Length: 133
Image (cartoon, rainbow, N blue to C red; front, top):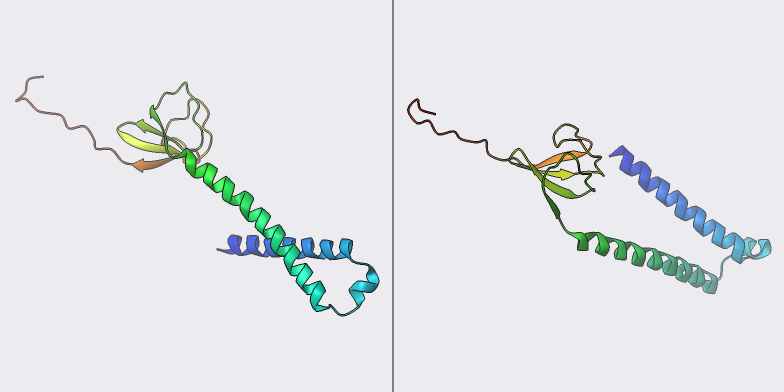
């Protein structure tokens, strides 16, 4: 939770610096010393709103692109293949999701930084045939 609050504070500080930079480049020092007029405040709000809208539009397009990819089922795990983040594989009757790009040879379950168990499979049931194999 602390990390998220730190990220939010860093974001707010970055936005404040962006606004300060915009003020410094768009106005002279004498204009900045005078009280703000209603017109200047409206112009500032419009500028910040336009900038924010452009950033939101870019983020929205990125989210749509990510969601369009959907789940990529890559079949049964093969140790010679590399897997991309988000790939789903079957290994030992269980379904595993790649949390990051996985290099070849890293088995699901062997490294929690790369793989997450998505659905635990059932263990195989052996039939006993009265002592015969």
